[in-house]
Image 1 (cartoon, one colour):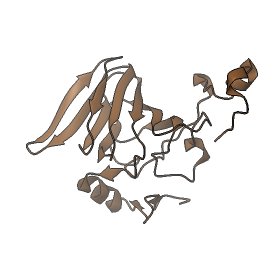
Image 2 (tube, rainbow, N blue to C red):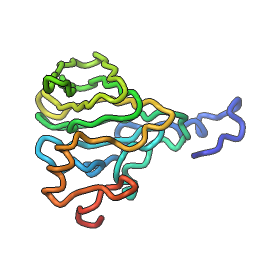
Image 3 (tube, rainbow, N blue to C red):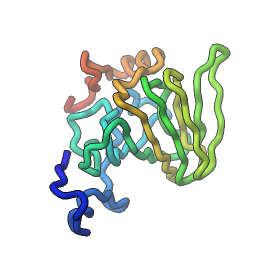
Image 4 (cartoon, one colour):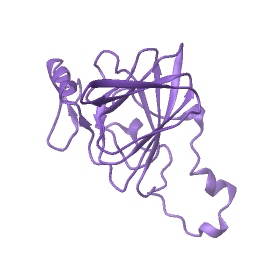
Length: 185
């Protein structure tokens, strides 16, 4: 967290410390336990706020804006056609807004998976505890804005079959929820 000595008298140079320029954003394709599963390749960018990734050892997954945000995470996902996130849940709400291309948001019901297609700048709020996922259904590379509420999103709760598929590839999570089994981890 970066301290602000006098927030009522910030210069442009001081405010610049809290700007994330799109051209220089850091992120990683190694953020989650499902990152190597078919259809789950994606580039996670933490813009600002609490961490919700499972690879806290990767500097590129630290928030791009060092300002200590209270009770939320704002991020982006970039993915190629057919890729996104496997079914998962959080202890808080999650909001999705496509910025580039159409995205399918999927969720689990007692009757099976359901989905809805969102176009750029459409917005959906997924309630707490619902297993949800998303995938890019457009051409080229899509970008999805993500907002996770707080005050503490906790660790990602994966739908059990996701963890089984990851384990079959030798990838799992340790007791603190961090990914293990990848080269270098």
